[in-house]
Amino acid sequence: MPRYTSYPTAAQFSPLIGADKYGLWLSTLPSHAAVSLYIHVPFCAQLCNYCGCHTKAVRRRGPIDAYADRLIEEIALVGARLGGRKVVHLHWGGGTPSILGERIIELFAKINDAFDLATLREHAIELDPRFVTRQLARSLVSIGVTRASLGVQDFAAHVQHAIGRIQPFAVVERAVLALRELGIDSINFDFMYGLPGQNAKDIRQSVALAASLRPQRVAYFGYAHVPWFKTHQRLIDEATLPGALERVEQAEIARETLVAFAYEPVGLDHFAQLDDDLAVAAFAGRLHRNFQGYTTDHADALIGLGASAIGRFAEGFIQNAPDAGGYARAIASGRFATARGIALSTDDRLRGRIIERLMCNFSVDLDEVVGGEDVGDGFDAELAALTPLEAEGLVQIDGKHITVTEQGRPFVRLAAAAFDAYFPKARARHSVAV
Image 1 (tube, rainbow, N blue to C red):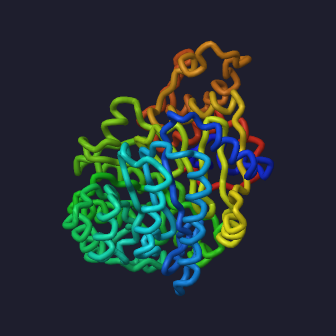
Image 2 (image 1 turned 45 degrees about the vertical axis):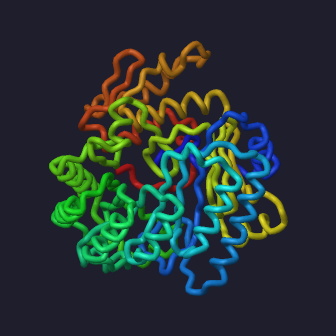
C-alpha cells in the first residue's frame, strides 16, 4: 500500500522526465517563489537490517569526500538556474548525514552562497544517536540547525538485536543532552512498530522512556518488510514479525500511550507537543505532507539534492539517479542527475489535493477541492469504492464530503487509495496498509 508522501507516487515516475525537463522547471520557477531544500546523504557507518532507505554502509573516507564534492557541484548547477531564491526549509536526510563530518559546514556555506537563507524557518537534520558527539553538535549549531530527528526505532534490547541496531536508552539520552546543551532544542524521535519480536509491552516501555526525554515530536512508523526490494531485510526472520492484527494493536497502543503523555496525534503516524508548530498547523488545517512525512512546509517548490533525492514543482516531480555512482557521473560531467519523474495532469493535481487532505485532515470536501473544474462523473466511482469502508465504519460519506472516522484513522491509506488512479493498475508490490 503506498504511503502517499506524494501523488502520483514514485512508482509512477518515468525516465521520460529527465534532465532537460528538470532544467526547464528550474529556470521557469517564478522569481518570487520560495523553495525548500532536501539534501540526501546515502551513507551509513553500518546498515541496519530493517532499513528501507537509499543508503549503503561505508568504512572509508574516500567515497564520502567524493560525494561531498559532487554535492557542491550540484548546488552550483541548481543555484545557477534559480538565481538566489528564498529558502524556507532545509532538511538533511539519509542515510546518516552527519557522516559528512566537518564537510557539512563547507556544504552549508555553498548553499548559503547559492540561495537566500534570510527567511529560513526550519533547518533540520536526521541523526543516528550512536554517532552524536559534542563536536558534531557544535558543528550543527554553527550552521544554524534548529531541529534534529533521532532514529530510535525501539528501546527493547531483544528488538534492537533483531534489527541489527544496538543503542541502549543511555546512548539516546546522551545524544539528546549534547544537542540541547549546545542549543538545538527541537528534538524529534522516530520509532517503528511491527518489528521482529516486538510486542505491546515493548511499545509502552519505549514510549515512556521517550517521553522522559521530552522530544517535541514523535513519529511511529509501521515497519515495511520488502525483502524483494531491500535484500538486506532477508536477515530478518519473517516468522518473528507481528501479524496484521498485532500491527494494528501496536499502532493503537503507541497512540494511546503517547496521548497519555500529552502528545497530540498529527495525521496518521506523527505526534507533537501541543505548542509545537506541527500540532498548531494540524489544528488550523494547514498541515502538509511530503517525502519526509507530515510537515509545516508550504514552499512553492522542493529541490532535491543528492543521489535518489526527489524534487517537487508545480509542473511535476523529478528524482535523481538512485545509485551514488550514476548520480556522481552525471554531476561530474556538468549535467543534472535527473533519472526519472512525472509531469502532473489536471487530474493528478486534483487527486493529489484530495489524498493530501485525507492523509492530513482525515476529511475532504470534494466540491471544495474541485471548485469549478470539470471532473466528469464527479468522482462517483471513487465514492462507490469507499462503500465497503463505510459499511465497516471506517469512513462516513455525506454527499461529496468524506470523513475518516476515529476507528478508520489507522486505515486512512485505504481511503486515499480509492482516489489513486494508478493504484488498481499498478503491478508493484507494496507494504501492508497498517
